[in-house]
Image 1 (cartoon, rainbow, N blue to C red):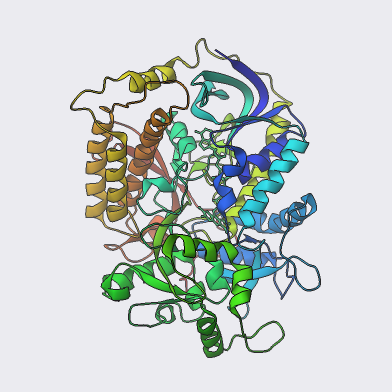
Image 2 (image 1 turned 135 degrees about the horizontal axis):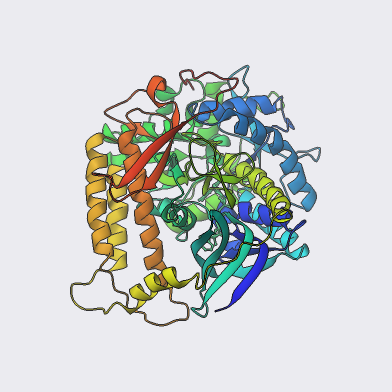
Length: 603
Ligand SMILES: Cc1cc2nc3c(=O)[nH]c(=O)nc-3n(C[C@H](O)[C@H](O)[C@H](O)COP(=O)(O)OP(=O)(O)OC[C@H]3O[C@@H](n4cnc5c(N)ncnc54)[C@H](O)[C@@H]3O)c2cc1C
C-alpha cells in the first residue's frame, strides 16, 4: 500500500484548490490530489468574469458589491463573510493580474469590466460594470495562471487520483484514501491538514451546465463521515442553458446587451424586473422563463425561449432603454464586436445548435448550475460541524463544495470566481500556519480497509440477471430531480422525490459492472460517483421539503412568500437512517446579519 506524508493535502485542482495550494506551499509541504488533470477542472469553463469593484470604467465601491451580494442572496448570505469577500475581491484580482493573467483591457490599459446580473450602482439602481474578464474565457485564464504558479512554487501534484475517503482519528482529520486511476491501486495520504476543494454536484439533475466530473464527491464523503451539509435546498438554475443540452450561455451575453424573447416575440423580463430587466438575479430570471413556458409562451409552444444577441436587437433595446455607451453616445454594436467579446459562445452555438448567434436567436432553457450549499466553514476556511461553530480540527474546505456562506439562497454571477480565489487563499494560509503548530496524528491500522471493501464489492459483484445498471439509475435520478426538485418545488413533489430516491438507493445496492479490471476502470468510478449523487439528491430533497417558504433559488409553489420570521436561518443536513420519511436529520443555525436588514427584493 503506497503511503504518502504531506503537511497539507488539498483535494481538487480547480481555482479553489490551486489558490489554496499556492499559499499553503509557501509555509508547509503541500500536495494536490485531483481526479482530473488540473487544467481540466470546471473552473476552466467559467466564461463571463470575476466581480470586483475596481471602478475602472465608472463609479463603484466594494460596499455596493457587498450590498448587491446580500440582496442577491435573498438575505441568507452571512454579511461578515460577504463584506470580507467583496473587499478582498479587489486585492485578489490585482494579484491575479500581477501573476500574469491576461485580462481584457480598457483603451487606457486598465482591466476591462462588463455588467452582470444583479450587480448595480446602488444609487441609480442601474447595472454597473464590475465583472473583470478575459473574453468569455475568464476561468480558463485563472486556472492556467494558478497552475503555472503552483508548478513554479514546486507544489506536488497527484493527477488522476480519485479520492474516496476522509480519515478521522481521535476527532481530528489526518488523511485521505485515493484510488490511482491509471493503476487501480489504493493510496493513503497522511496529513496534518486536509482541504476539500472538489467543486459542485450539478450532475444530480438532467439538464445541467456542469461537467461530467461534478458529482459532489467531497460533499458526499464528508456526509458519510458525519459532517453536515449546509443549505442544500439552495441550488441555482442558470437561466440560459442551450436547449436540451444544458451547456451554459454566459450571462455576459445579457451583460453585453442580449435580451430574452418569448414565443410571442415579447421581451418578457420587462414584466418581472422593470428596472434591470434581463440583468435581474438568476433565480428571478429562471423563474420568469419557467412561468413563460408553463403559460404557453415558449417558442412554438415548446420548453424554450430565445436569447437574442443579434446586433440589431441589442441596438434596438439599448435605444428603448435609453442606454448609452461610456462616451455618452447611443449604443451601436456590430457583429464583429460581439464576435470578439464572446468568441467561445459564438463557437458553441455554431457547433452544438447550428445557430449563428449574430444572425439568429439562440434557444435556451434554465440549467442546473451552481451549489450554494455545501460543507460548512467559518471565515478561515475551517470546517464547522454544528450550529455553535465547533471546528473539526485539520479539516478545511474552499470553493463550490464549501458554504461560508457568501451566496446564501442565490449566487450572483461572477461571485464564484471571487469566492474560490479569496477563500482558497485564506484556507491555504491558515492550513500552513496550523500545520506548523501541530504534529501528525497516527493513522489507524489499514485505514483503507473499509472503503476498499465497498469498492471491491462493487467491482466483483457478479453481473447476473436481476442486477442493476449504473447508467439507468443515474438517468432515473436526474429525471426525477429535474421534475420534482428543480426550479419549482412543492411538498408533494419533494416527498415523492424522497420516496423514489429511497427506491433508487435500494436498486443501487444491487448494481453490477462489466469492467472487472484495475486500470482506468471508469465504470467502477462512475458507480462510486452515482452513490455520491444519490446521497446529495436525498439531502437536497429533504432540506427542500422542510423549508416551507420561497427564497432565492428555492421556490415553493405551495409557499410562494419569503418567511423571515421562521426561515431566516441556514439548514444543516445529516444522513440518518432512523429519521422516518426522509432519512435526513435537519438542524438550523442563524444567519449573520450586520448592516442590511432583510427587505423585499425589487429588481
Ligand atoms: C460552464 C460554467 C461557467 C461558469 N462561469 C462562471 C463565471 O463566469 N463566473 C463565476 O464566478 N463563476 C462561474 N461558474 C462557476 C464557477 O466556475 C465554479 O463554481 C468554480 O470554478 C468552482 O471552482 P472549484 O475550484 O470549487 O471547483 P472545480 O473547478 O470544479 O474543481 C474541482 C476539482 O476537484 C477535483 N475533484 C473532484 N472530486 C474529486 C475526487 N473524488 N478526487 C480527487 N479530486 C476530485 C477535480 O478533479 C477538480 O480538480 C461557471 C460554472 C460553469 C459550470
